[in-house]
Amino acid sequence: MKIKIDASMFREAMNAVSGLVDEITIQVTNEDMNILCMDPANVAMVSFNMPSSSAIEWECTTTEEEPVEKVCIKLTDLNTILKRTSKDDILNIETIDNQLQIGISGYKDFTIPLIAEEESKEQKMPPLEHKAKVKMPTKKILDAIEDCSIADEGVIFSVSKDKLVLSAQGDMKKAAITLEGEDVHIESEADQKVKFAIEYLRKMVLPKTATTVEVCLNTDYPLMLKYTAKGYKMEFLLAPRVENN
Image (cartoon, rainbow, N blue to C red):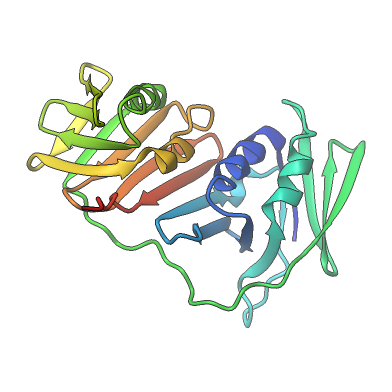
């Protein structure tokens, strides 16, 4: 694998993935790069896809027998290097033997080891059909989640045909934030209501990655957050929060 890409784009994406997992397997084909992983608690998943057309240079050492090149690394190793990049830097990423070589704009060079891929079942994003979809500014939902964190560690998403309400209720505190208006676009077959952990939501709402987010939900169903950023797409899946009686 030999890929040349925008450093800022890749840094933001990998920083988001690292909120959920410590190790990743990057799957590269002639067409794209994919990362799909689940957090250790089996509560959340993240999917990253970058088409080869987003790269400045793209070479992939695949064959008909092995159409996918897999690169397994520790995210802490990668992100430590990505933090050393600046806004206009270009990354040169290349696999040589059992190492990943990362060059930054032709004047910085780093090498990190590849790790063995864990033996597990192949993960796939489940084919969910959500009845409610809301498109809105990413910052708007992030602010609402932070407002709800004042009252409780979980936030309830309640959607109707014309508004989305995020609410939380603790022992002595309450919060309710109504999201509606021209920049909140809702498609909903019926009213939906479901609760999620703020701890995970904070890691999944990414105003620096994309200015707009699509929120997909059903009652008592996993939440999906979809982002289309410059050069790549990201999706997060989060299981509903289970209340302990």
